[in-house]
Length: 133
Image (cartoon, rainbow, N blue to C red):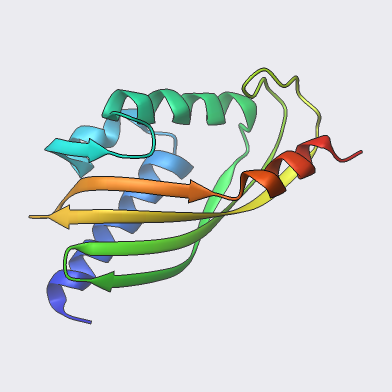
């Protein structure tokens, strides 16, 4: 892996750890560029709002990076999120069920900051896990 690609991977994994696992929603100025484009949650503020909903619904959530591929400015991440549903989640009352769901993220890193993000999650599996008895 080229040094720039390695640095981009380190930026992305540090962001995942700080923002998603440590729930430091104010770290966005440190990790995201001024012209950041959020393609999964509509805006930087939308990203923060979604993360707050996840934190409320799954306060013990933990994101684990399973695989990273870097090529140029792009960093692709496959990760899992595990947690216990103990708070409201998009109108669904707490079930006490645990989730273990795969997520895919694509980041574009420019000059050491994340300039773009889009993401996908296996929602079918997550809702099945929430509905399980």
